[in-house]
Image (cartoon, rainbow, N blue to C red; front, side, top):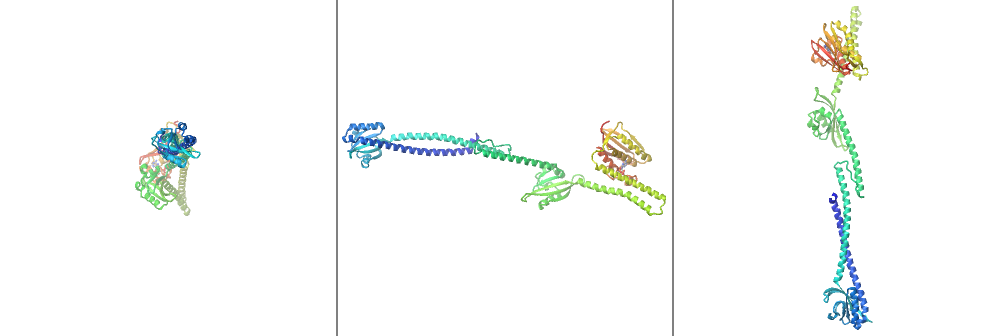
Length: 595
Ligand code: ADP
């Protein structure tokens, strides 16, 4: 019911009420006028009729001065109608008066109504009567008998009587007007209240919608004028909600895409203030995300390259690309920057999007690849050059003796063996790096593989006078793996240990299980490896002493094959060494089961 307090209700009801009251006032006044007229007219008519009647009846009694008859006639009329009847003789003396004693009355010949009636045939005068001490309305007619004037009949009515009657009628009109006013005002109240209620419901619902209450709807209005409006507003709200929902979805999707991007993305406005910054960008530029929002990029970053690339893109309105080296890990992060200016359909600048792509890894990989190709070519070139030189000398020298030729052939054989070893190692490595998955994996007994590797290394160890010890594990070590690859891992480790241990030394292969893993250790008391080299010996082609390695037939690929095999089997390799005292290589591989 609070709509009854609204301005709208007050105004429309007040307007209706003013109209109703004004109309009723006019109607009342008009009615009063009409009633006054008709009552007066009616009164005059009655007096005329009575006067005419009396004028005929009083002809003879007036002529004969028959007072008794005159009195009877006058009384009949007077009693019946309440009118004052005066019968006047031709000489002006009053013969009879229904209200006064005629004997005490003056001569009436000169009364205005009497004079008028004699002169014009009828006299109508309203005047104060001294006799009655009241205002009286008179109507007088002359009485003639056979053309002879015999007197005057005068009818009078007290003004007060007529006014009292009119007062009564006026009061009636007023009462009717008041009843009509009450009824009409009630109707106006109901109409205005219904309008106000519907309007109030419309306003409240629309305001709630505008505040963002998406679920709010206009209720049923029960008003034929407002109902279609309410339905239209509801329809509009529904379509807006649908649109809002899909827009929110778009925003969420976009935010998710931003967040999920590996590339750093920064969105700036034309003043270079950060509007959006994803995690990758925050990480690359080492910026606290929440603090960066709303601040200009040039204030947040000291990196000149980035700031000037953004300046240029905004100034030239063109895409700017640049390569930057940011701080961070040793050597820094290499970043490819892509700045794209944004503009509205009308060409107004909207800012720019900066995309930062970390290319450190890619560049490193590229460098490793080119290094690898250079290294491999170099490694291949050495034996090929040697073979070629030996063969050319043998061919060119016609006098070469058979002993020298044999020596040459022996060297050529040696180099070709090295070459094929190198190629075999390269192929193994490329297979290891290229192949993914564990298709050829089967259940293997690591103890058995170790036994085979030790046996095949025994000859080389004995040739160098080394003690080769094999310490078996107390249990069977079962691993899931590739037999050939794991054999190669064992061969390479034993081979190195034998190669880099001087004569009379000792090489030991130990197997054990530790915390669900197989622990494989190859230890020697050979030349050892300097700490700075320990990190790098697992790299391809890395050799601590090139000449020594080469002379021992090494390719520099053995340990990188070991590391690759270990990692493909879910394990890892590590080294502990002291120059001059020996080295310990330790490989951990996950066991399939404790048995
Ligand atoms: P290579 O074919 O030269 O042996 P590897 O990759 O197997 O190549 O080993 C890399 C380098 O690590 C070797 O050149 C050698 O200098 C060093 N190295 C490997 N194993 C041992 C070891 N047991 N003792 C001392 N040095 C070793």
